Length: 210
Image (cartoon, rainbow, N blue to C red):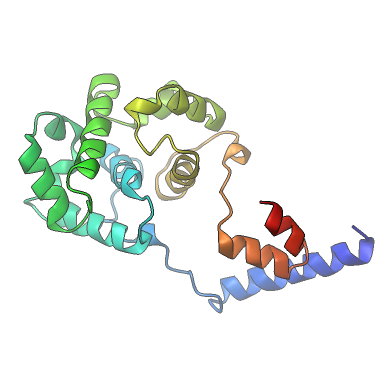
């Protein structure tokens, strides 16, 4: 990469950042902005941004978090954000609460994922996911290694794409001070790949090799 090319690329990136900050590119409202505005450090806030994340697979993130907020605010469905309550809840009740505002789209599978996570949090972390982070020194590599080593207890959260994005969200919407955040990797989707191509950093052959 020549010096002139580097300068041109940096200038392009700066223009993109400027355009983003000015709202020209959109995206200033993130899916997770649909939240109840809880105190960042409270246990319930950590749970709010963790449990729905496990259902964020091949679906519209904006609709997911809109459903999560409706579910949280509804007195009839609020209890599913309490791991201890879910751990003792019968299957039909849990399913109905998850489906009421379309937080779950798959009646059985999504209910199983939600219950498994809640049982794990109840059995190992006293229903408080903050304890998981503290036990792993708030260190990203340690957290990721722990989750992967116990992946059956953390369905979908243990998947590389969701796990990394979950940690990113936790670092932005809670008071969690993560260490070694450079270990958080975001899997590039087609939009990132196309933008990188437009910047001249990759060629068509690089895309075809993926």
